[in-house]
Image 1 (cartoon, rainbow, N blue to C red):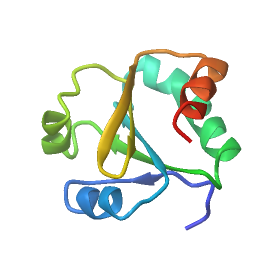
Image 2 (cartoon, rainbow, N blue to C red):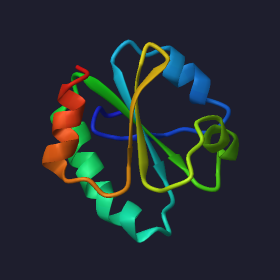
Image 3 (cartoon, one colour):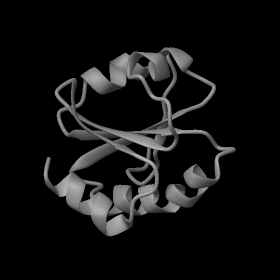
Length: 109
């Protein structure tokens, strides 16, 4: 997979991907029908491209993988989990500017 592609995770491959990473992971919980998710998609893609060698980004879409949504108590889209070593470090929900998102990521890498 190209480093600039953001892999879509399902309930079947979520744990495997998350537990095997040593880099900062950002998981985007997204509903493609949601206008805020559509606005944030290019911001998330730009962030992933900027930090491509230092972070790993994934997407979990609604309604697929609902068990993951329930596990992490995701009730709003878009929501971003910042994780490292199988621990949640931060949760960002709703719209956020690229610069603010970049600053948040910089705190954890």
